[in-house]
Length: 475
Image (tube, rainbow, N blue to C red; front, side):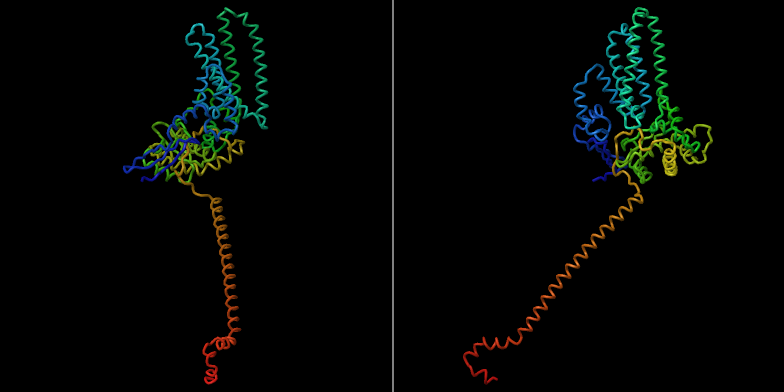
C-alpha cells in the first residue's frame, strides 16, 4: 500500500483528494469524494457563498429559502452567473466593482436608447446588464456600508443611504417630467444630454470610490505597502495607499497570486513534494512559483489562520517587488536581495523560494507591527482565498507556549499517577496490617489453647476409656 503524502479538502464540502507517490517518482492523485460530489459542489458554488456554512450565520439558509421563493424579475440567469463567477471578489475589491456596476448601469441605459435599432437582441442584453448591475451594486454597497459603520450601526447607515438615494431619485423624476416633453423626438438633444449626464455620473462615482479610505488589507493595498516597506523601510498611511489603489483596471503584476489552491497546482512529482516539505516544514502554507506562467500558487494548511494567510501573501508580494527591482534600474537595497535576484537570473526556483522565505521570516513580524502603528487592520484581510486546505502536508515547529502546555499535561499526568501509586501503597499497607493483626490474633488464640490440648486428648482418647489403669501404669 502506497503511503499517503497529502490529504486535502475543499472547505466544508465533500470534495477530498489524496496524494501518493509511484515507484517512478510521479505523484498519483486519488479523488476520495463520494459519488455525485462534483454535481452537488457545482450547485453549492453557484448558489451558496464561498465557505458555506461556516462563512455565514446560522439563520442564512432559512432566510434565503423564503427570500428566493418570493423573488422574481428578469435577468435571473445573468444575475446567478455573475454572482457565481465574481461573488467572492466583490468583498476583496469592493471599490473597483462598485465603479464597474455604475459603468454597466450607464451602458444599460445606452442600450435602452438604442433599443429601436436592435429589437431582436434588446431584451436579453438589457436584462442581463441590469441584473449584473443589481448584484455588483448591491453587494459592493453592503461592503462599503460595513466599512463606514463604526459603531455596529450598519443597519442605520444603510437605511440613511437608502433615504438619500430616494431623495435623489425623486429629484431626478421631477427633472425627467420637465425634460421629457421638451426633448421628445429631438435625437441630437437626447444624445447630447445623455453624454453630458453620463460623464457627470461616472465622474461623481469615480470621485466617490477614490475617496473611500479602507483600513483593511486586500491584495492591491498589500502590494503597495510591501513595496514601500522593502524600498524605503516605511509603511504608508491608509489615505496614501487607498489613493494609489486602481479602481478602473486591475493592478499590473508579473505574478498572479492565487491563495488557497489545491496541492496539485504546485506539486507534480514526488521531488516537488520533498522540496516543498523541506522548505515549509515550519509554516502553515506552501508557496509555489511558476516563472513561465507568471503565477504564484499558495497551498494553505487546514489549521492556517488569518495571520498565516497574510504572511503567505506578504511572501508573494516580496517576490513580486524584488522581481520588479531586477527588471528596473532601481538600486535601492538591491544588495539585501542579491541572492533572490541571482535566483531569478538563474531561474533557480529552490534558491528563490529559500532565500525569500529567510527574508520573510526576518521581516514579517516588523512589517505587522508597523502596520498596526499606522492604523491598518491586520485582524481582517480580504485576500480572496479559495477553500482548498491541506492536512498532514507539513508540520509546524511547536512554539514555546505549546511546549509549556504539553509539559503541564505531562506533570499533571505524573501527579495523577503519583496519587494513584500513593493510594495503592496505602491500600496495600492497610490490607497487610489487617492480615498481620489477624495472624497475631491467631497466635494468641493458639497460645491460650495450649494448656487445654492434653486434657482434651486424654478426654477423647478411646484407650483411656476402655483401660482405666493403662494410663496410671504408663504414668
